[in-house]
Each structure stands twice: as structure tokens, then as C-alpha cells.
Image (tube, rainbow, N blue to C red; front, side, top):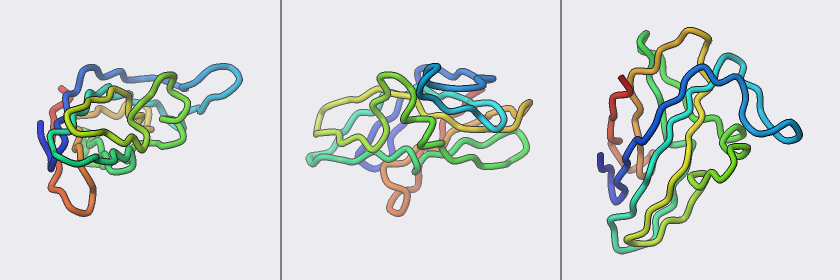
Amino acid sequence: MKDGKLQFVVTKVRTGVSSVGDQYLGQKAQGRYVLVSVTVTNLGKDSQTLSDSDQEVKDSQGRTFKADSTADLYITGNQVLFSQINPGNSTHGVFAFDMPVGATPVSIELHDTWFFSDGATVSLR
């Protein structure tokens, strides 16, 4: 899916994750994390900044959840936290969403930039 100058591909979804990071540096979920792995490509002619805080997941009850930036920091090798993506380049990473136990993620709305884009909605079912 494309939004603005960024193209998003959801590559994996993991649900029911209680914490991210390791035994020394990590973050525990209030509920359970839903981890959405993505590949993001800059289709534009200028560098684009990708912010995890611009991304949202909706659950089966219509509730909206923002990515947890602190959790995203602790995911090993994560490249989507405030990434600068040059034209033609791609980056890979994971957005962590802290959702209540038993909540079912149904879609993710991915944004080039929150204020200036409509977002691209991808089904997670």
C-alpha cells in the first residue's frame, strides 16, 4: 500500500507478546503487544522521515491504538523508529502496539506523515 511518497508492505504480524527487548533492556506490555513487521520504501525524489508514532492499529471493537515508541526502541535491529529513508531505499522493522489481552487487531493504518496524508489501510486478518 502507498501513502504519500512511502510504500508499505506488511510482512508479518505477531500477537500475544508480553514483552520486547532482553533481560537487561526491555519493555513489558500493559496488555499484550501486537508486533507488525513492515518494509517501507521511499518512492519519492527526496529523503523522507518515517515516524512510528504516525501509525495506528484498529481492533475488532473499533478502538484505535498508536505504536509504542518505547517498545519499538527495544526491538533488536528495528529500523523504523524515526528512520530517514533516502529516495529509492527501503527499510525494515517492527511497530509494537500495546493492546488489551484478547483484543483482535483487524487493520493497520500506515502514514507517510500524519498531518499531511490520508494513510493506507492494510487488513491484518
